Amino acid sequence: DVKVTQSSRYLVKRTGEKVFLECVQDMDHENMFWYRQDPGLGLRLIYFSYDVKMKEKGDIPEGYSVSREKKERFSLILESASTNQTSMYLCASNHPRQADEKLFFGSGTQLSVL
Amino acid sequence: QQQVKQSPQSLIVQKGGISIINCAYENTAFDYFPWYQQFPGKGPALLIAIRPDVSEKKEGRFTISFNKSAKQFSLHIMDSQPGDSATYFCAAGGRAGNQFYFGTGTSLTVIP
Image (cartoon, rainbow over all chains, first blue to last red; front, side):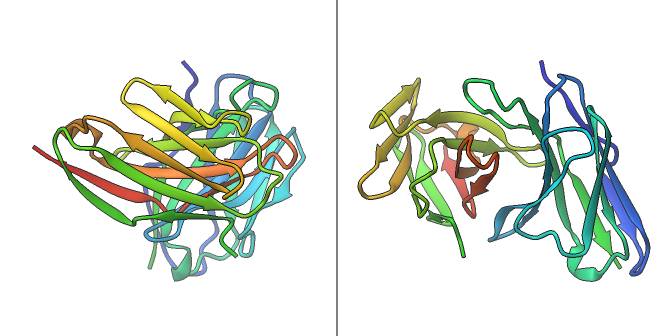
């Protein structure tokens, strides 16, 4: 079974800190995604990557950056964390040519910025 | 602009009843319409999905109804069970953009 692993389940950071959220998938998927989940807003795409070193902005990229140096790993970076970035962050991956385009999600990282 | 609109926000159903969640989309280029189920503390997991060339897809107790002309699709859960209590997200997207747009979610509670 495909596994998407997010490095931390819970994180507490201070305003202004640089924050790294790590995601690793073990099924050789080309596409990887970062979403944030907020009550009443659903899942909103921050960034996605369709290949190593390639990235595309999603709907809410402001305040975030990403890094994909290896195919299996996709990192989300908050350059200077702010309280409005307190949220649940979900990483996902899929293969662009699989028949059902199914997204495989990690369990999420609940980030609190104080 | 919300690409996918989902309703209701929450739903309470008696055990054995039918749960219905509705979604509407804007972009006619979308060609893949999945539903994801999320339990507390877990990431969403694909439940069922449909492409616009069919009007209905059924898998066990779960059915997607798709109305291309109205740009709407819905999830029907027959014989709802307490174990179905979860948050459900509809989504829309497709190969063209590699991007999926999610609805705002529906919290379903099935009362025993």
